[in-house]
Length: 87
Length: 87
Length: 87
Length: 87
Image 1: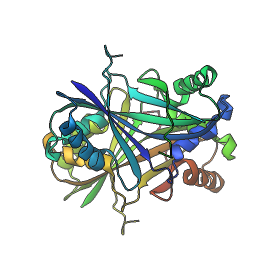
Image 2 (image 1 turned 90 degrees about the vertical axis):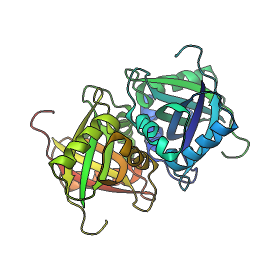
Image 3 (image 1 turned 180 degrees about the vertical axis):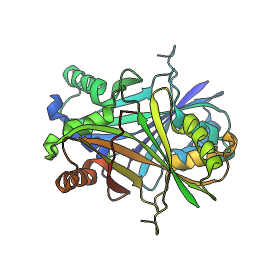
Image 4 (image 1 turned 135 degrees about the vertical axis):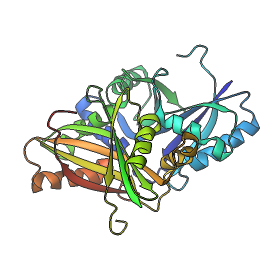
């Protein structure tokens, strides 16, 4: 069993209003020193077997079709160690 | 300048219908070998200066108040290397 | 062709951090007089044929399984007039 | 006290992968007769006082800055009757 993570973020040139809302709220929350906040999506997939090249190619295909819209979003696929016991 | 990432996922015992929709769609997309899909949120914060203990404590506080709802969500705060050139 | 809308909101007793972030940001945006903001999801479904009792029953079933998590979310299914021309 | 709703949907010409995932999952869920699914965001705002022209103008401004990104999203602001008792 392996865990593969797909991170999906709006492309840097596209304004992210959700992140902007958090950034604007920071001073009233007493949080200083943060200059940018971007909000995206994180998908955690459990793969049955090894996260080998073949599995990653399938997930790559999945990411570009139903996890992200590549016209407006960037995505990154990566293998992540499964926590020893579920958090 | 440092990048801090906050990953927010529904707690494992709470059904995630969005992830479930993706999982159910997989066979028709010809993607096999995936046994679980969970969808969460990813926040990327740019910190002005070092991501030192103080900055992380502030972000931790932020995460538990406006990035995540700790009653239903787990979150993880971590420093991430900033890519050499943007993204 | 009919349009059915499913609105999904966190239950009122569950804190909504996204809405909270927007609410906290309002004063700095110069927006006054708003006392609560909640963020949810809106699904627009196009139904082939009439949105009759049968179609609505199917969408109701769909809503409770992959559009919303009824443990933490409320949802409302309703028929909406299709705009004369697409916006 | 009045309730104002802001619906935010990706523009029709922009692919919505989340809605696409739900649409693809429908046959396996035994749900037929649905030809399109789009997922967007719904914001419920409680206004202190009347939802008069002034309040709506402020919310309109808010919608175009931190609720939606008008480059990729359409939004609609409308007054909604407050339920007699909260659901």
